[in-house]
Image: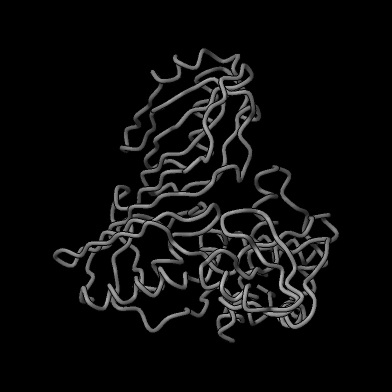
Length: 362
């Protein structure tokens, strides 16, 4: 690749806390990684669509969507979903189907089990008025089992207490960059002049990988500077678990208190056309992004609009248990955050028997 040398720091980003407490075997079987979407609203009883909760194992989000669409004789384009979930996991996520396919109650009879043990089943289905859009969920609840953990319960308790208080850097996980960095290879080729993929989803992966790379670069530097959980003058500030932002031209005691209570968070760029932070925050961000001028220019030419993403995420309702070197962790995260970024601040993850996931974790 011809991406800047600083990219290495982005792909293996610095951690906020001390060294990992142990290695840990990760995703030895799909049931070791359970995810359930927190929708944040209920079906409204409308006539246009069917809102359904689907449990899947060993299949990615789009594969299940295509199978459901085919089973009802409808087009995948007419279906909706809120986020991509790992293939190598046991997940529950929401979809919408066009109401013309069949009655909502009839969907609860639908399931499919494949010869390799993968499959899916519809758990709930309700009449709903709108097609589900990407990003529409409030968050995700995780239950993760890790093996071979040699850390003491005392050390784990201290680390989890720190994370509950301060949160963790909200990095995009390695899944975003593709198996073997395949998505980044496409970004590199695109920036060098190759055409974008013709399929909409494939183009979206290129754009999101490029923007995720720039975001992780900014966050990695803020972690090195120990400002990932601090506000800088000129910062775009995020209201916790929302898409609302405001500019902090100055940082006063009220903002510092709200930051400590995890009511607000500093942010980094999802690069595109639009306003950039000012003051100290703007200077710091511009300095990190300068080596990525070719990617920035390509994103601007593609017409992407700028957005912001919190630099930190605070796990909620975190519980853990250690027994016979097996660590079970449960927590919820806001939409778009990765469970692996939380785990990486506690243990060094070692791949289990399953292949590397190829979809987003949150």
